[in-house]
Amino acid sequence: MSNPSLYDYPLIYDRVRTPDQDTFDAIFNLICDYLGRKPYSVMDPACGPATWMAPFAQKGIMVAGNDIDPNMIKAAREKCGDRVLELIEGDMCDLRFAKGPFDVTFELAGTCGMLPGEEKFLSFLKSSIKHTADNGLMLLTVFFQEISEYDQFPWLVGEWGPFAVPPQGNAWLRYEVLSTLPESSIDRVRRVVHTSGVEECQVPLIDEYDMFSWKEERFWDAMAGFKELEFLTAFRYDEPVGIELCGKGRLSGETTVVFRKKAV
Ligand SMILES: C[S@@+](CC[C@H](N)C(=O)[O-])C[C@H]1O[C@@H](n2cnc3c(N)ncnc32)[C@H](O)[C@@H]1O
Image (cartoon, rainbow, N blue to C red):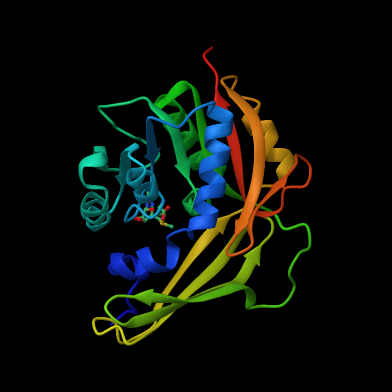
């Protein structure tokens, strides 16, 4: 039997990937500053169990989410309750929301990097733009080729934890790069979640997947084709350190780019 995936356990996923309050507040404040007000609605095109949408719902903001996995949609519905505008099952590259457009579109958990290559990312971007309001914001966490290349594998990206898992367990999260194919900008990544005291999960949850990284120059060339996107800022976030703004020309690793969608 293959090893279970973290996605088979939306509750554990939720505990290890929900932003801490300081990180959420910093990103929320940045959104309010650029929007000039609190958003009325937010949308996550690959929402998972609403790890990022739920804190917005708790602030009374309406949320819309899409995910390819029906279990994630179910978990998101349970968490966001009466703040849900719309939750749909589907491909993030072909979003089919009936409501919207939404004030803010975000994917802050790195799912954009799981799209296999530039072409898929660009179809995702087109689809997301369609569902974002004019003068609204888009926050997308993408991967840029590391300025300092790693040369030893597995290369430890980082370890986090313990995270409390109700009723009385704990979980730890680790990411490693197993190999890299520089010519196609693909890294093979392993994510391992260990738990202790979580009755329904007795083995480590191990996922391996490919992550696509952009060369920064190539990214801006591709973005130049989107006249409706105005680049505002970029930042990296790491818990518990918080967010660190970074400028064009210095984008490396997992970075969130922020655009305003202009009316054209
Ligand atoms: C890393 S999680 C991100 C979840 C969420 N955005 C968050 O902030 O935690 C990835 C999610 O993307 C979903 N996903 C992966 N590929 C997808 C696709 N092509 N279209 C829609 N959802 C997808 C998975 O089912 C999973 O729930």
